[in-house]
Image (cartoon, rainbow, N blue to C red; front, side, top):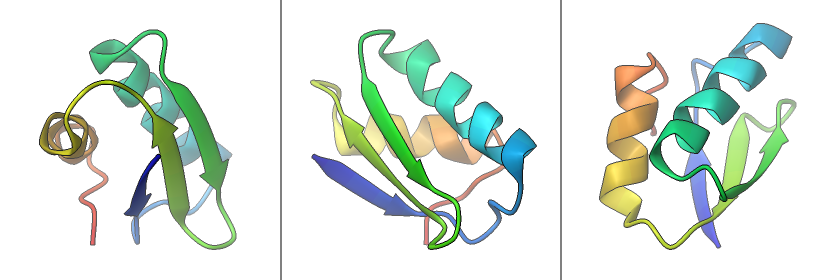
Length: 63
């Protein structure tokens, strides 16, 4: 399980954008978003750096 803290994530639209960005990298990824804590957990075979890059490109730079 890979976890990211995403300070810029603040609404339902953000949750959708984060989920879509991660699924573009790994369509089979398991994504759990905790909007209140501004965290996302990802179950994926992709490397952490690749997932972090996808989040950053979507505008949600991991802290």
